[in-house]
Image (cartoon, rainbow, N blue to C red; front, side, top):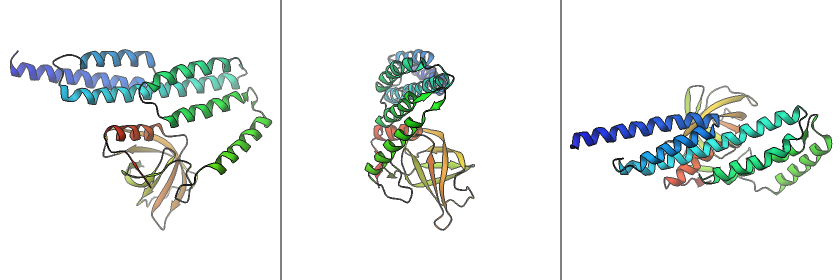
Length: 266
């Protein structure tokens, strides 16, 4: 094979890898585990071929791991949402199915670097599900949940800032937050929310908005729904709280650690 032919073969392999990654991202967004696994196997086989550019192998391996982990998370959320709807519809037997299925999915996700925060998030949702019936959550369970939550909050460490976000805050590296077509840098951030700098917009407290989240140091990005906690017109700062623990931020933390630039706490 001539040098020119080798270049063409490698370019074709890279294009094939990118096409597979694009398919995997779509399948992960849908939580479609079976085709995601098949495409991940195809990508793995491609990376093992001797003509595949060796400097790119590790990058594609990490991309594949991250996408497969995202797919497992989506599948777990979809499963719990579906079971919850069945339980609220009066099918209490559905509760018996969820624990084992979720455990199996969590086990698969653990192979791809699942974060402890997401496991805690799932445990919390399963606890709520066990207290739910066709009539919703009964009064006694609600009161018990409230007392547990109050006790947990009292025992949580308090982090800097007006909002007292119940998660470790990071100041560096800064994240980029896209709101209504404008991009802002963060003052600090966590898996539960972000504090945006130089914000001069008019989003009001309580408003829900979908924001884009990314970081200049890594390739990962995504979008999350968040609620406005505070719009500080004097400091030009906007505090946003994610509606759930942000899987986008979790993935960015994982990618930053893999890149050797772990986030620094405030």
